Image (tube, rainbow, N blue to C red; front, side, top):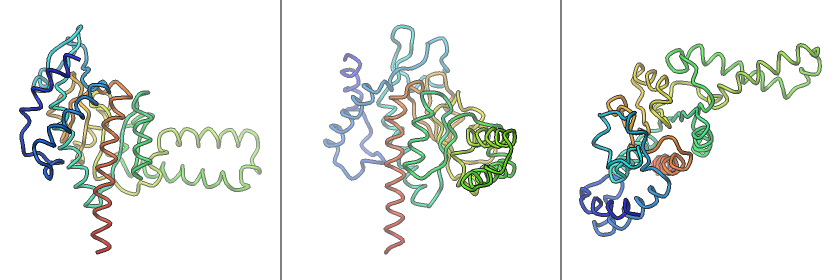
Length: 265
């Protein structure tokens, strides 16, 4: 509880001009921010990595240390969350498509759930090299998966021998494991959202190479200079990632709703 009390003093120092709450007066914003920071604390977003693993470039986003681990400054987390949500809303308003990436056990479910709810793409098993930089080849594999899934619904399988059915099932399951979340992706995404920088570094490097904007969750052992948009926070917890991705989902839906209204009018 001491961390929350200390954080309250930081909230009073928040800049009055912010992105997501510009329509509210300052007093209302202070109340909202304090509640959000408390929720972030309860979600474990303040829990950084071991102090010996830290990246000095993350110093501006670290509050201190506790029992051998860094404590992330949740005021910074809140400010960067606002910035990221404003960016996602703007990109959704433009009609951009989103790709969510999280291949670790604790991030896999969050990534898939958020992608499905926002009608976006996802990779939540393993990032295969060239999924973006060699999209021409990856797209052929996606088409192959779609073809096999279509055949599965016909009587074609019944005509195969036992060995052929096993081979069919093996190929289908392998492609499904890696490309299920890309089945409807016809071209490269407009924005890639990564559940972790260190754990999804290969995906991040492909985004950099293709100049695709990326949003990344940064733990205290990450490098903020490698990401276009980022949020300092615990990337090792389902609960903390689920908290952030809920806001991503709302921001994307808000942008799309605005786009739909503009189309109607």
